[in-house]
Amino acid sequence: EVQLVETGGGLIRPGGSLRLSCEVSGFTVRTSHMSWVRQAPGQGLEWVAVIYNVDTIHYGDSVRGRFTISRDNSKNTLYLQMNNLRTEDTAVYFCARDMGRSPKYYYYGMDVWGQGTTVTVSS
Amino acid sequence: DIQMTQSPSSVSASVGDSVTITCRASQNVNSNLAWYQQKPGKAPKLLIYAASGLQSGVPSRFSGSGSGTDFTLTIHSLQPEDFATYYCQQANSFPYTFGQGTKLEIK
Image (cartoon, rainbow over all chains, first blue to last red):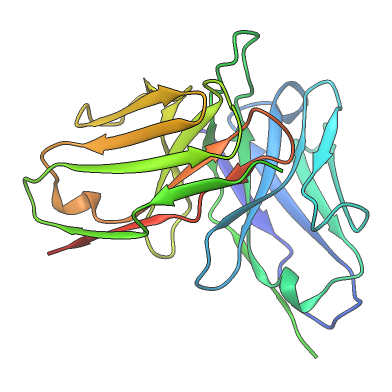
């Protein structure tokens, strides 16, 4: 069964650090593109970061320089290291498999999602 | 960054109705667009990829169209389980961006 399970969320003070994990089953993270998407309370979706199967990485503007996406192929797990956290980083964080784009400008979407893990940044 | 603007922000409809949601990109995104459905407390679900491709397992009453800057998601013959929030997302250039969402409510 294809499944993503996020862990690592919690309450953290501004300026602190947290590492989220996304344990993958049913497919191999090493050969997949993987994204993090977040959703602040009562708000819409915000794309955070992506790591491609060839290790190319991109970040959203609001997290670049503070967050780091990575994976451990031996554990089949995706990570999001979050440093210098701000109150505006408070959100539910989802990991998702990103099916990427074809050379003909066809994007295949994020087809498998975890249930999310909640991060609360507050003093 | 590419801005994605959805309209309307909310819409009320009845079971059996048809609804169309529009998504406009601030610049050309080709067909690098996806649509998602999200219900409260749940993860988003992929409905449409490549602007008009129906994701496996999604009912055929959902359809997408458009290319470039203007896109639509149409739901025919609304069912009770379709009342949710819908998001478009562009993946033509980084950073990827989502529309602000359209909440579909029961009239």
